[in-house]
Amino acid sequence: PGIFWIKRIMDLLEEQHARGTFFLNVYEMAKRGEDVVRSAARLIHDRGHDLELHTHPRPMFRFYGMSQASFDEQKTILERGIALLEGWIGKKVVAHRAGAFAANTDTLRAVAAAGLQADCSLSAGSHVAVPLVAELGATNSVQRVDGTWEIPATCFDQVRIGPWHSRRILDIEGCSLPEIKRVTRWAVRNGLPTVCILMHSFSLSRQNKPNHRVVRRLSALLAWLREQDDIEILAE
Image (tube, rainbow, N blue to C red):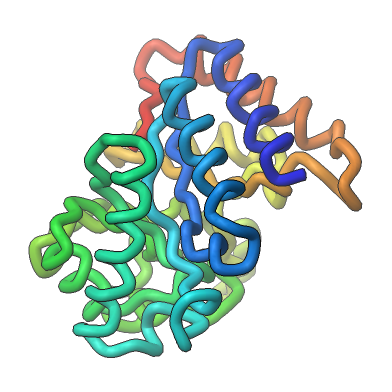
């Protein structure tokens, strides 16, 4: 089922002459088998999309999240994932996103030590505790940290009443189309270089059936983005 929805996301991107960045959890091969995960990697790569490393290390290592591991252990986890991806697709991996955004500054140091250039694990709009937010602050700005470019998942205040606010991540499933457009235009007005919109392979489905509302939203968003002269759609 996951492969089907990955294909569907790629279909929608390609209809608007766009490409996406897919962060693949290679460690899942310990449960599903190498053939399954390798075929997903090659499918994404062969269709011209950007394939990078996603870390949910528990199937192969003893840690649920990267921030639970030491610097040396994180570096080992990353190097194992990089070797698998690069061996499957024959292309250098350059970026990482921690599963559940469970990354800390040791993760960023390990990312650089493992030879990667960028990390996308800072998420101030997540509803789970994100160590990087505590260590670096809540921001949408790209920053250089310990030799790594940190590119945050874009967040915004969905509701603000006086000092209270409800902050959330910019997500194709959890945000409305007007919200995503508004935040994107705000980013352009304020000179923000990147807007990162999150989605998963299951974002377009509900109980393993098409979530037509989200499919229509993604299609409409991609068409709208293509019409914006001052916005460029890029794989990271």
